[in-house]
Image (cartoon, rainbow over all chains, first blue to last red):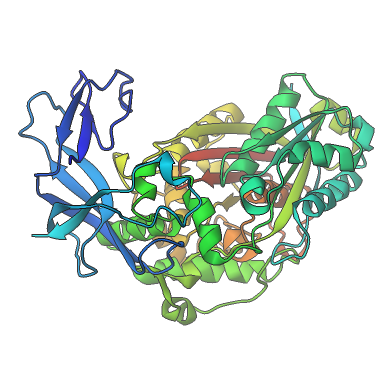
Length: 126
Length: 383
């Protein structure tokens, strides 16, 4: 499994990937797997009013990955939003992506289950 | 061609027995009456609505309303831009008159939501997010929690400043007979209410609401023939930001607010200093700060000071949300942007009753998603 970010020919990086770079409109032709990297929590929330099919409470965090080591990337970091593995999380915490097969129950929400993926990565404090 | 607003109406916002059809036609009828326009004079009809199909199973509502109001064979269209559908409706209505395509345009916005449970309604709204956000169980309130924490930590703003937004808007809402809540709250009550998306609590969020609002647009020339009291749409702008919220360069900058307001100021030949009153999209208290900064009233990271100083209260330097805002008036998605327009129109023509402030120039900022799409409208009182 991968936590795939997209890179365009101008070195802009986004997570998730898009057919065209949100910054410059060029096609994103390269990818970067963030799954093995350590990120830093930029901000977080614990949501207590969650929709049907979503765990309650649901602690979410925006995590920033340093990508200054990536050749071909001109952006210095890329951010991703995801669930945390714990409700005990703080801004500045170092976290690692941990794979989960199902982040919420696909059968219960308003979306057609087959219309999208339901697996992904949670953030676990290192 | 100059575009004028010559009539406005809104239904009672709140938990209503009426379904979407009745809500829309009530506001539409009242707006026709307020403007003194006969149904057959309407050439374009726009209906702002986000999700009548998902909420109620009723689609094709532009046709439904056109038939019910007797405006046939007017051109009709449903406008969906999620929470900013109402603002987008103002944009469409303005375009229709400015382009010469229509001389009389009726805009009606509405939503019926309260028959769903809070969880179900939250899910309908959360379905606007990117699939990679939705699968994590993200809700709009959770975006607000994430952003509020970042704002408070980064700018060293007191938690109380957010509570003051809620207190102010509830206080303003007391004087709005159409508001869902006409009840004052205290800072203590706001700060002690249950946590919804930490650090935000119940009173940092607008309620789930049924309701409808309407505006009548025509040319300035026609308006001057019909009435002495009208407002002119002197500036309007619309802009789109990233769909994925965490991809924005700065989590505290709403690019759509910045871009759309810039466009509106340029068209009107005005600056933030010229504003007398404004309606901002306070779906969450933190959004009032982000919009005050985005429309150029406050520098980045300082809007909380205005809340603490009382500068945005009804008797302050720049009254914000004299209607009570989404916070106390309620937020029937597709109606909200239109209702913002109703409030600034009433302020400009002197029909705001106990909410009246001295105003010749007013701004409304309607935010869709979490800043995903934004419409900023500037209206001025007719000379």
